[in-house]
Image 1 (tube, rainbow, N blue to C red):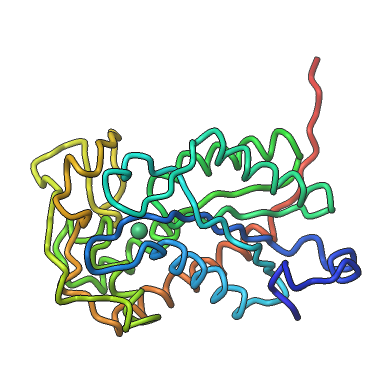
Image 2 (cartoon, rainbow, N blue to C red):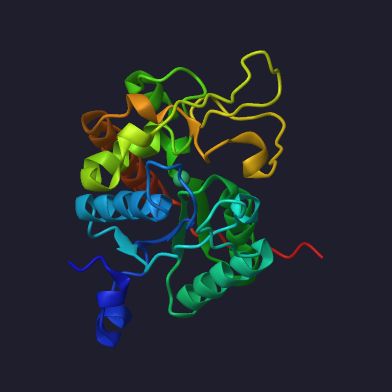
Amino acid sequence: MKTNYGQLTVDEVRDTDKDRVVILSVSATEDHGPHMPLDTDTVLGNAVAEGAAEKAPNDILVMPPIPYGFNEHHKDFPGVIWIEPDTLGSFITNITKSLAHHGFRRIMLLNSHGSNHPVLDLAARKTVIQSDVICVSVSYWDLISKRINELRKSEIGGIAHAGELEAAIYMYLHPELVYLDKAKKQILHNPDSKFFNLDLAAGGCPASMMRWWSQVSPDGTMGDPTVADPETGRLFLEAAIDATVELVQEIRALPILKRKDHH
Ligand SMILES: [Zn+2]
């Protein structure tokens, strides 16, 4: 069973089960400290989507990913390619509307870059209104925060951007592209704050604020990549893949509900 949307022929896409969940991975091309590549979010998002498709090929189709995101606040660092949030949202809903037009009913927007989260959430809600299909948005780390906290070596604040989680998974996938000797521990999380949280696995953030990245991080890192290791990366990735498969199965089982006009 093919799981790569781009590899389907017109006949195959016409005949495929339209209740398979179509995963669109959205990431970013941006600085990840001196120790990791610009494509970190894209590589990690693809690994989760493709790993899930390998485990549940009958339930999943994987779209060609969007490797750019909402990250203008990173542009003081070299290499960042940013997309306006309105443009990104429209680009995504153009894809989801196209999928709905061809008969697909269940779509998952899989996020691997923090600041895309509100854009993808909005795009998913717009897709439901515009196309009457099921559309879900999720950031992969939110699916596995309990497991991350069981496996992590870093303290709270160690998993934010180019920290332990991303470095460990990238090291597992492409060890030759992570330069741990250049990595620095930069914990910017304030444990005394009641409302702001700068750790992806510390249980959400009641208040949100995004500063310019260069105001808060000297080299782009936020977290502790120095403790990352590939074996823990494998376990993080495995957990994200398993949770994505579970989420897919739940989305696949959701009823398609009818609207009712109460005027
Ligand atoms: Zn990242």
